[in-house]
Amino acid sequence: MNIILLGPPGAGKGTQARRLTEKMGLPQISTGEILREAQNKGTELGRQAALFMKEGKLVPDEVVIGIIAERLKQADCRKGYILDGFPRTLSQAQALKKILDENGSRVNVVLNFKIPDADVVRRLSGRRVCTECGTGYHVAFSPSKTTGKCDRCSGSLVQRDDDREETIQKRLSVYHQQTAPLIDFYRSQDLLKDVDGVGELPVVFKRMDDALGMT
Ligand code: AMP
Image: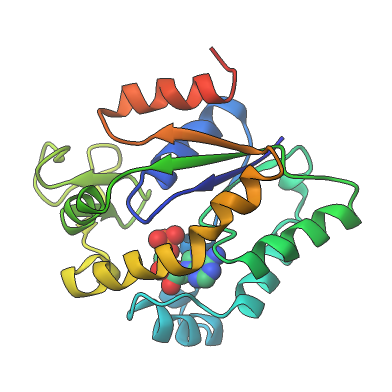
């Protein structure tokens, strides 16, 4: 089962991917996470990617496609995977199709999380992320029990550099220009299922399960 999670930044793709991973035993493959890890390790890839990420721009297609091509070869991907944040451009979607075709595989379903732009801004500007386990919080909507500490693992909660106000608008316009065309690309192949991403987490989980026929 190869699942793509599509949607604007802050639509809840990461949170939903983590839940699907627990439920289905498939790996979550987040290009954003892979790039942030490379930055934390100080690799050349990380340094290059940081130049784009801190401005809210997309990292060049050839870089991200290369990362995904390598990642999908790993043993844990054999039974399928959940792609969170890839593809983000038509070229990436076409490259993914080519990689899958070569392996006699295909995309099974694309879940398109829909939330209005105003919600994206509200969610991202208050978002805090655990540096240890990646769990997400929101200062107003889902705060941790102890300010600055993760409920799950006591790791430190931080604001991502690209979750600052000035970068959020840029990421939103990049989404509308470069990523939103994927909605029609996958809808025309009858692979797309819309999921209303507005509401409490359990409600959105239920909608996602319904879309996947898991209820
Ligand atoms: P995310 O964690 O998915 O919000 O991604 C954070 C940032 O990483 C994005 O704003 C981009 O700069 C970069 N990034 C992540 N995935 C991709 C991708 N598929 N293509 C290009 N850039 C990406």
